[in-house]
Amino acid sequence: MVTLRACLLAAFFCAFSAVVQAQPVTATVDRTEIIRGETVILTIRVEGQSGGVEMDLAPLETGFQVISTRTSSQISAVNNSMQSRIDYHLTLFPLNEGQITIPALQVAGATTAPLTITVEPRTSSGLAGQELFMEAVVSKPSLFVQEQLLFSIRLYYTISGIRNPIFTDLDLPEAVVQPIGTPNQYETLVDGMRYGVYEKQYAIFPQRSGTLEIPDIMFRGEVTDSSSSYVFRNLNTRTITSYAEGHSITVSEKPANYPADALWLPASEISIRETWDNDFSNVRVGDSVYRIIEIEAHGLDGAALPPLETPSIADVNIYPEPASIERSFVDGNIVGKRIESTSMLMTADGTVRVPGISIPWYDIDTGEIKYATIEDTAITIGAARSGSTGEALLLSNADMEEPTRESFAASAIEPEVEELVSSATTPLWILSLAAALTALVFALGFIKIKRRAPAVSPRKAYPVAAPMYRRAIAPEAETQAFKEFINACSGTHLPALRLALIGWGRQYFADVDLHTLDALAVRSGSAEVRDICLRLQQSLYGQGGSQSALANDIQRLQTLISELRTAHRQQLATAIKDRDYVLPPLYKA
Image (cartoon, rainbow, N blue to C red; front, side, top):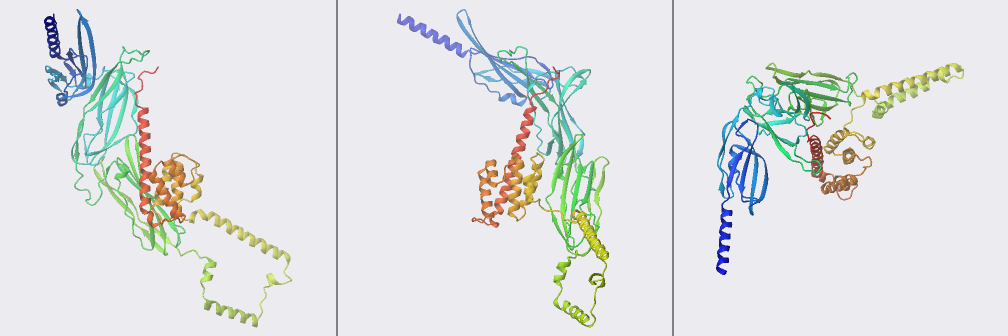
């Protein structure tokens, strides 16, 4: 009996070992002929297994992109014998056309057989009628370096309920890529069939000459198939993909006849204009005039426009302000702006000539070199406005002595009496008329001064403190408050910096009750901001700090505030992207 049991046990182990070692592995595909842009499903079946097995998918990376992987297992009893298997379903996206071989794979110690599929090129005539297809469109096949190239990705679909849409990232190391607004969604007819269209647009600015390679763009998403059970939350999904061929763009150097010492500006239009806050009709010594220069370029970002040199003008003190850079999109084209403002204080009378501006640029539509210009401006400066009281105080005693003595002598020799106002015989109606005329002259003079006050008052370099606490909370007011804060950081007036910082905090946090640096530091949630605010208050109120020691702190505070605003904008962009994460249904209920 012992021998029999030992034999049976040995036989069992031998049979079990044979079953474990004999693990047939097979590989099959759902189809052998596909069109470029479609996917193929590779199924690898391992017999005698119900759990995970080792699998090396590295050989697939040379010719395919693995889109998704899912598994299914089965255990059954046949003639009192337990049988199991596990299937691996790999969705593969071929990277090339023609005859492509799916290489042999090492799975559970075994090797699968290689498989061959045929990938046919896609033709435009074969697109219509498909449930999903894509196209990538460029505005031109060739352009100059740093010129704008418009690039559009359009996804056409007839499927409702596409979930988790993902597009290939447009990563071009030798170009600057700017998304144009948010994706457009609309409907169109293709060969009589109605499609929903999801379109993403970009402005691309190549930074080097040669060939710009825009890679193939692939889309991947999921749709729920008909076997899903919405009652029991059993959602069976399938992966859908689409593909759009990339483009090779020829990028040329700037023309040889373009001015060598000028910044290269290829655009469809560039204009420059200036405005003044004074009509120059009554500018005097001590007055200031405010000059605003705006450069606008169609087809260039505002950051690509050149900064203007600050002119040196005799008898004029010039105070430039930080430039303002703007970017907008008009009819799918980028429009950049650069705005520079300058205050000019007149220090001597005479004629002042403010030099003009000439900016060369290249017209990409006509192939001509053009110039955006502003002519010279002549300003006539009059003498300083006289202040009678102040000028009288400047007269010397010697100037006053002689007339005074003469006056006394004349008074002694021949007494002079003003008959009109001093004589006792002056009629009453004459006194009344004189009083009325005097009152009228004073009234007219007061009205004239009030009317002229806005025209001659100089532009204020910084806003006063009171409006910061009275401004209504509005999204567009935060940008202006941040500019005022930056301007205050470049000055030397700490109370103005404190007010500007608090004014920005009220707009950024939308808190009308924020009136102190302590409250701002708490709302920021940054220990570093709190420490800087504490040192700022110590300098303001004489508790151990010094103004000169705050230079590094103020610079660091600008960096921290800018980082807060950048993180906030990124959060808003992510929220907008998540809101549009699911494509809308093609057919409305």
